Length: 220
Image (cartoon, rainbow, N blue to C red):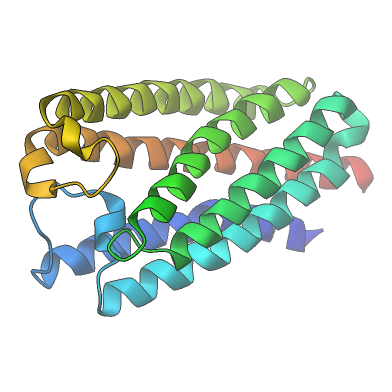
């Protein structure tokens, strides 16, 4: 059962370390295009690309495993039908995260944007569905999810709104092939909101660690 808790911890600490390291390396090496930049811009040829691809690819697999652990460990004390939905969504999130790591934004822009969007949208949906499914969760994990999911929604809507304003100014970028330098005035808002979105999703993942710990105590 220690493995279950460790897997849940890796699920949020690995992407946290990946985001911090890749962003820091990208900034310190001077490879950044402008500041602030999107997280995916740190998937740049060099050390940051190795860290980015390795961290997020492995994390995608870990997320699939954790979604299975949550399903197996918590379905008996949760709304079992929603736990099935949670498992399916968790697999979608993990698969898209690994594929996002494979398809970098520089060489595979459309595929990267598609998979990254799936990670954000389905990641938010996963958190909401699993939260509702875990009807008997402890107050600490519930309160953490109330805060993290609320921040995720605010950050996601703010990021989309900022990007939409930029695309209204440059409608030729709607179909892709962005000129990021031209979009930078809106990226100045969208990029920090993307970081907030990702960190909020990590807090939601951290809350699931408490649920797996509770499952361990119940089975002891």
